Length: 142
Image 1 (cartoon, rainbow, N blue to C red):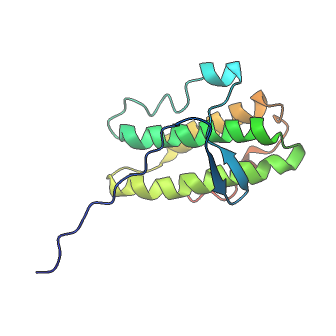
Image 2: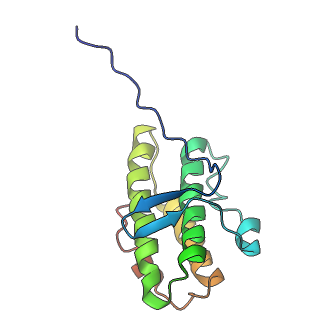
Image 3: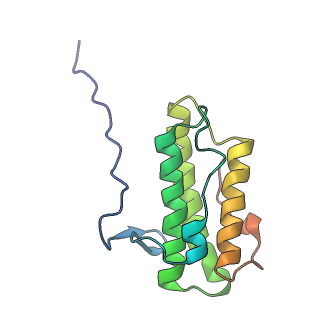
């Protein structure tokens, strides 16, 4: 018979004060962004409320984007140094894609466009609109 399988518990991604998480590209600030345009922006809006995309996974995607914003605000990278942060966020979306698949969903064309549109908004908002969006998302596997 063996042991019963335990469900893997999802990590608590809520922000609890000014925390930091060590990432591949350095520290990603876990405290939220302060930019007014970012705070007013509705990340992954087209995916929320769509039964195909599980709400808790969409929320994890939103957190990745908000943490990218916070990292840009905290680290203030210039020029192509922004790519290190966008690549880390993209790799986190690669990991999230596996969770979507486990939930009988996927990051398909519509979701890819939503993520790309939001990353483009982030780049423009923080004064990096001249950077190449394809390069910003280069490590994507979805």
